[in-house]
Image (cartoon, rainbow, N blue to C red; front, side, top):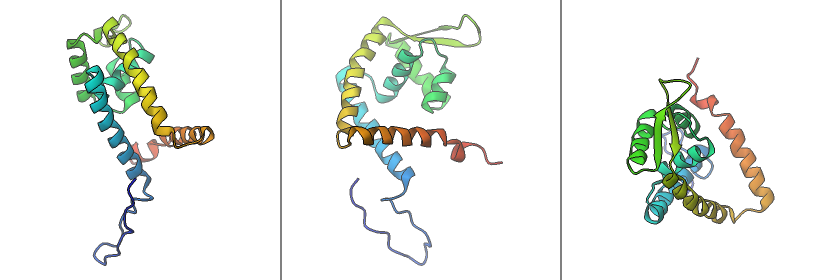
Length: 163
């Protein structure tokens, strides 16, 4: 992250964020930059954006899952997921059918074309991850993954309704 000058105390503003130490900002900045560059790369090389890729990667892991599960895992709202699934279906990358166990729910799967696209993108995605983490030793990578899992597991501390 580019060095940011230390916050200047201003009497009108008792507190200012120190963007060199404020974890939510770091996570947001990293996520935004990764998403934007991934969309440009994946779109130009594979014809999918990062949102489509995230959904396709989840469908490869959990074939037949409903849209509600996609929303839960990825953290997207229902509207964008529904629109993205419609676009993926229109391009022949996913098939949306009625769930055999519950007719009120849709079962979503990658098509053969979707699986082929997934299999091409995942090679690039894992390569991008390797390049991103190349500044860390293997032991540091494991610590980072553990810390991120713990933070993810603690999200309810800030996302759950107050009460």
